[in-house]
Image 1 (tube, rainbow, N blue to C red):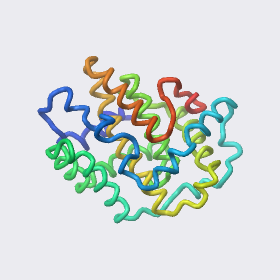
Image 2 (image 1 turned 30 degrees about the vertical axis):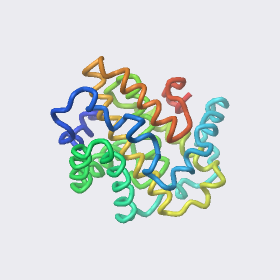
Image 3 (image 1 turned 45 degrees about the vertical axis):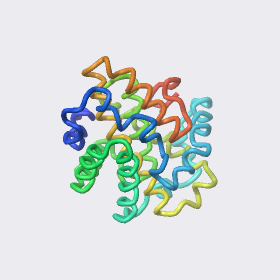
Length: 243
């Protein structure tokens, strides 16, 4: 399997090609783009108790795949280009406040469709879909976990299966998520795709440049904490998910 950072890095290759080290990690800077802030209007679904519920599943040390609270189909959605555009515009608005040039570059990436195509292709290697909230959440959390370790490698198929099952069970256990609309699920998934791409990009940079590793680790942990109310520094990625 292709290394995730090599597979996704092309989608951001045009971003700030000559930037200084401190600018290279701007997309992970909590002051610019922390978690769901201004990105996914439906993000409160994730923030309310996702991390707490996932942690409970870790404490039980059992896979949620065996007894899902809801069928997996409830986590899939019909993609709508208008919803995707709304999420993209929110991301660009956040970045534009501090760095208009980077926002302009990222706008081109979004418009090309390259990010979505590459992420979708990568996810299919794991039997996962870009149009599924659980799948995209698992991708983001796995990629972010690797970034906190300055690891430019891939999660193993077993790790992704375990994490996907854990995440699917967590989403399905949330009563408020049962009423989520198609658009709400897509907003969360679209944000996951963007953050996973950033995390993959900067995991590669951190692996190549130890000076960036601490910054990437700190900001990635902050992003995930804000998004999903969980601390990746306290968890390990295993074949049973994040434990």
